[in-house]
Image (cartoon, rainbow, N blue to C red; front, top):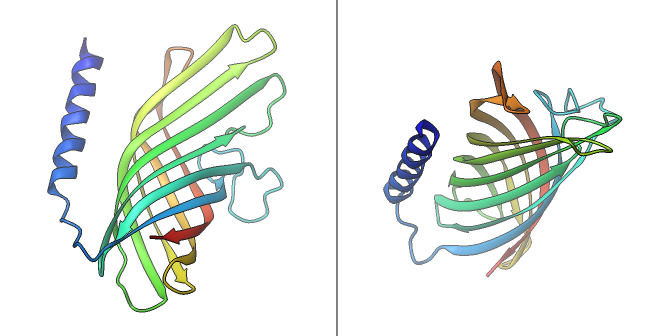
Length: 195
């Protein structure tokens, strides 16, 4: 019962945050940005951004709009074997984030800062019997920054580094593991199509 109440509160907070975001001007341009990158640090299987032999592909897509100074995006990303290559086990992480952006229009190169909240979903499965599985749906936040580079009106590239952190402790097979909030970084690049 407490979990349902907490979920309702989270939904209400997200709705209130969305309604409080500044309106994007009509001159804003929408974009879609398929992305690829890898997770690092924190709970990921790759302890550092450099010198890591176990990089796992993180793929996704961002849909958003960019105004002259501010923007908004919805980003979906997924990574397999998130916790590393562990014999007899598989894992994954899915992030769905609603983000506000500060991205001043200073020409074809646009630096940006991004922050938002959303879902961080982890899945751990002990194989081959698949008897032991664990799914966690966490409310979390992300913060990061990067650079858009546009080659004309409709095509560009984007690179960024983001940090993800959950608000709740991680659970394994229904057992809360103490002060173990999921956190990790992600480095990614994307092709950006504006329309």
